[in-house]
Length: 314
Image (tube, rainbow, N blue to C red; front, side):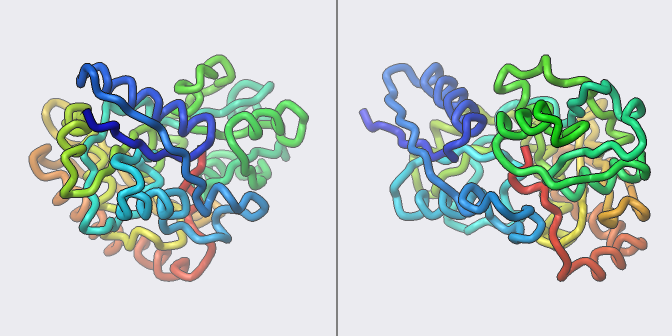
């Protein structure tokens, strides 16, 4: 029987995520062999610059997609939030497995955001998080934070920061839930599109699609599709903080999204409800509504400024 080659970034989190997917694939396909191939991406190589200054299109997926297209691997496991809003027509997301908690987490000896002292230094590589936290606490100082999850936690423990912000999902997948001191409410910090979700990518003409699609969660696909459609309508790679979260509520799809400036002084937030049968339509509609609001001007101003910085942010 064919061995399925699964591509992954080499970080501990990426490998844990990929190993989990491989185990699920093997459980559903007895006798199938899988091998994990690690691939270093541009985002993994450049660690001395803030993500916002590097650019944001495919930083953590480009090399993996190239390996798919050249036949070096059969499947790829990505964090859904790392995927650009536009994809090569020869590639397909075969599955969005069940989503983990999409929320952001604060980690600090002070406990909660409202307990941080004035002037507290908070680390994050995400302009989306920066903007929303400054809106909630304009008296704190935001500082860039790069590196894998262990590195970020070590920098916090060494006292380089008073608090750091990470995705709940990544901490949970690495068994580090105990480090979370506050799960940030969506009213405080709306997550990035696709946050908490994994995406299994394959070539459109590869039978491996049939193997991967067994892991697809219809609710996760619906929600992430709406969030990505909103990003596509807004321009996807625009250099501005954008957040989006869709949820299935009482058989309806509710999409909440915002556009902000990097200092949190201007945040435009909108919500719409639509049909779960057409998530693209809902995402496109809400994206258009934001473009027709003052958010459109924020996007135009920021189009050539440093980017959203959520790509690859743990």
